[in-house]
Image (tube, rainbow, N blue to C red; front, side, top):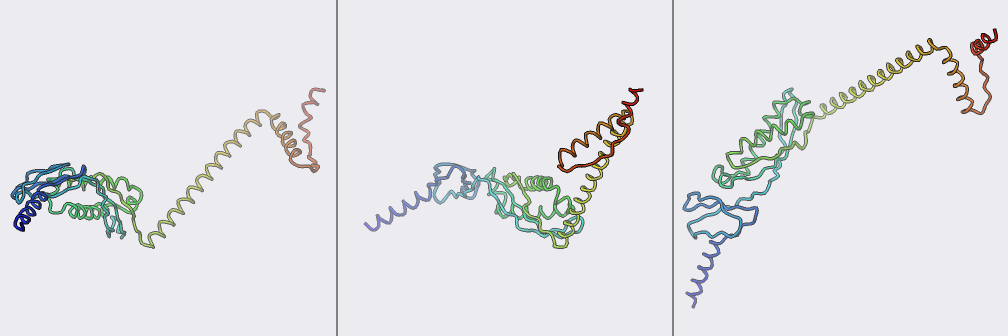
Amino acid sequence: MPFIGIIVFFITMIIASAVRVLREYERGVIFRLGRLVGSRGPGLLILIPFVDRMEKVSLRTVAMDIPSQDVITKDNVSVKVNAVLYFRVMDPSKAINEVEDYLYATSQLAQTTLRSVLGGAELDEMLSARDKINSSLQEIIDNHSDPWGIKVSLVEIKHIDLPQEMQRAIAKQAESERERRAKIIHAEGEYQASQKLRDAAEVISEFPQALQLRYLQTLTEVAAENNSTIVFPLPIDLFQHFIKNKD
C-alpha cells in the first residue's frame, strides 16, 4: 500500500507539471529538449513531462519608470531628467529567445537613449519642445527593441530638475519677457489711440459743427453725473450760425 501511494503521488506530480493554464493576456514560450517550439496560449496547455519547458510572458502594456539621469545639455547645462516608458511584448518567442532579460535590457536601452538624445539638445529646446523630444525617444527605443519582439508605444519625460542658479535665471528671463510684452501692448494701445484722435481731428476740421455738438454732449454728461452747479464758458462760435441767419 505505501508503494502504491508513492506511485500515485508521483503520477499526480507528473500530471500537474504537464498541465498549464494561461490567462488571456499570457503566452507560454515552449522549449522541447532545448529547441524552441513556439509560443502557445491562452487556455489549457499540455506539456510533455521532463521534455518540455515553458516560460510565461505577459502581453500587457508595461509602464516602466526610467530613473533620474544626469545629463549635460548641448549648451553645457547640467540637469537631472527622469521619464516613463510604455511598451508591450508583441512576439513572445523573440522576447525570450533573442535577449536574456527583456525587461532589464529595455530599461538599460531607455536610460542610455535618454542621456544621448537630451545631451544633443539645448536647455530651451528641452523645456519648450518636449513633445518633439518624446517622439524622438520613442522612435529610437522602438527601433532598437524591435528585434526583441517589443513595441514601444510612448515615452514621456516626467521631470527636469534644474540647478538653483539656472532656475533663478529662467525666472528673471520670464519676468523680462512679460515686461517686454506689457510695454509692446501699451505702445500699441497708444498708437491706436493716436490714430483715432487723428481721425477725430480730421472730421472736426471738415465739420466744425461736430465740435460744438461734442461740447454740448459733454455738458449734458457732466450735469447728469454731478448734483453741483457747474459754470462753463459758452463759446461765441455757437451763436455764429444764428447771427449769420439773422443777417
